[in-house]
Length: 434
Image (cartoon, one colour):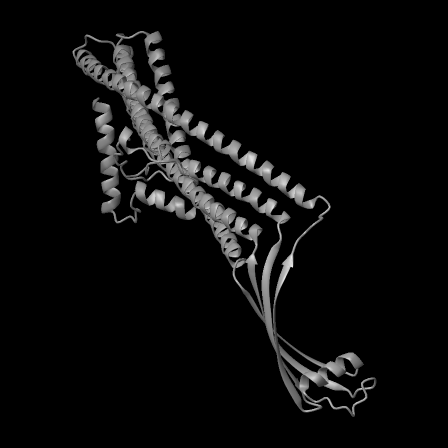
């Protein structure tokens, strides 16, 4: 107990000394800042945004297919081809009966025109627009799901850093206690009050404590690397702020997972895709019109013209292409429906498992807390007995080891509870950070 407190004071004093010395120490990373960084810098965030942008562009394309299409064009032509020259003279208002229609003069023509096409009945286009709407909705939900997954990963990595730091403190306390006990044992061995076998046993326990210390430091570095990776960065981040308290969700505060919303939208898009494929059997009706201005410089003439009309297009035979498109669309619909059922099952199973883990870790934390209290009292009593000469060094070392294990168990249970609460909130479609 005293060793752990002394270590904490030494760490605090070292931090204060660095600050007083004027070292530029960056502030610790807060959880909110870590989550913000992960959603800004991680490649998965860019990927989800790119897919959403693509889906929204496809929706704009589908909407544009239902609107009139206006185009402008211009050309300049010089010819003596009889048919073109004859029509050009008529368009310019420069024809006269004296012109030989078989050998007309060379003419030029500057044409400026505008055309418009208006879709009136395009059933496949309407279905494509509906599919694009559902596709955009699925992309938005997929982006939300990606952001939630990044948040969960970042929160769990943040908690793991705190957990690893607790292990380092516990291992350091154990190592310091073993060093003190070993020094006392060597003194007693020199005076003949401790056997060589007991001394070797204490030296072996100190070596084990050093091994645990190395493992704890390595675990902290790995936890820092995991946090950096969650943020889309390289290196290791271990300078983190305190972990804020996040309440466990209640039955009344359940939301909906964006993964399910995306799967439903994909299923609806696939259904619209079947309608779009079948619509290729239907006729398509449209209106069109145009205006033209022609100007001839050789004959000094000009003219204007316009036209309007209706057009229908109906594919009567496609060589089986339309039927194949319908079959492919129906297969995509079956696939989307299966993915929706699979996503629903996964969410339900995930929620059930998360509830079980929450109940289990809650009991484990209570047991670890009780174990820590008992180990702390046992270490205190053994320290008093050792001071009075009533306990051996091995007794005290064993008590310190049990206390270190209890500290680690509490740290693991606390970290596990926080991770489970974060997973519960994610499973039930709630903001992981309220």
